[in-house]
Image (cartoon, rainbow, N blue to C red):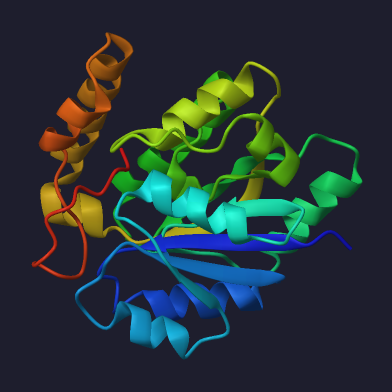
Length: 238
């Protein structure tokens, strides 16, 4: 059976890291690797008490994910944000895709953990983006074979939109698959910053990046969203 390594980059995620790891294990992960970017809360200590490997890295989601990928032993890499969690059977969905002969690269349909109907529209829009444009974001649980990941050079080590840039490289070569999941997603980002404001900001940042504005400059306009108010690092996920 193919081995799936789940890689979780964290920064001040003490309230979520244990659940993220435990649910990844329950979902069938062969191994879980937590890569800490310098947390100043109890994230590392709590993660160390779970069935995972804990690595340290300079801060930055791209850097942390590349660090985890380099240490992973699985044939398939699944990158998971700390405020998302895998459902039971998620890993089996990835393995089934691989065993069907299809190229192993894609993401999951989402379930945002909020009841308002507008969140169902966000979920549908995000799924449609993957199907039509081959563009998955990090909070959709990006997965791909380790061989493909290495061939593409990993995540571009930029402070924002590393997931978008990797997916653009992928879609030049392969078709992305959207698995049913659903991957559960915390609504904290939308609730903290406002759903409309957050969504419009994401679109504007994406357009600006396509026009050539550097990710370093764009990161100054993306708000932090971690458990600890002490953190001043941008959460690099549109």
